Image 1: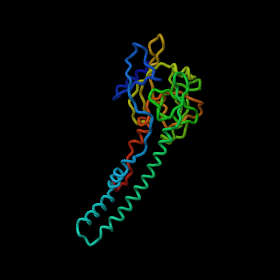
Image 2: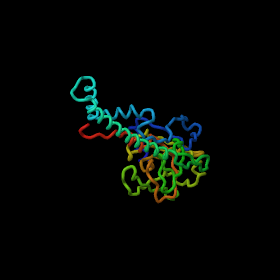
Image 3: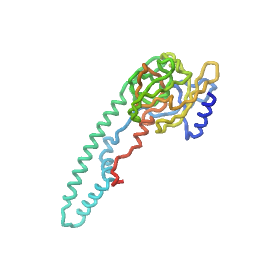
Image 4: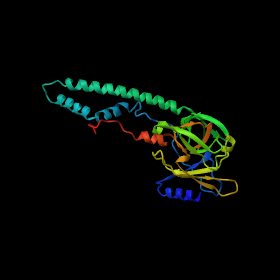
Length: 286
């Protein structure tokens, strides 16, 4: 354990910033540490590029970034300004046709993304509140909520694995939607919470988590959990990628697990990975 803690502390030196998460939104015991509530984004996912108001200007800007479209636009403007033997219609009409068809196609695809986002954001999620199981929409999930996920369900956000129905505190997940691997991966619950199997047990957990700010690397995570008891000093355990359950992964061969939300919405590793992808362009245009 001491070796693990030293490794964890060494990794923390590279943190640009860190966040403190209060498990179940419970304040730490008096005198333990200062309670500093922090604001985090909700669990709403937005994969669409356009809105009703910015579709036309943004789409036109993106289309005229293409060399071919911009070239024909210049030719069309020159033909309008200068008296040329060819009519401006010969270059303007094909350009207008291409721009219009492309805009309709991209608008339809973005409308489908809006529908998929709404369906995902309204999915029901089970979480623990005052020792009882409560259901709410995925978009209303907050950092610090304790979530219950059942077999074959997808994790609604990035979770620290607290416990499962298995006695050894393990669970199996598939990450095919994240990295294309269909094989089952084993994850491990926090040592001091893996024995909490009921809603009442997990609802009484008194702990805080300190971890790095969101970053897109799927296989890297550094943090620690402080588990408080009534009389003793907190038990500090290091956290790594084996304790992290990623949004988009699916629970397999495990009846249910409990986990605490640490990254939600557009701060999840899955969202950070596709958020940075730009519009595809050919090698000639680059």
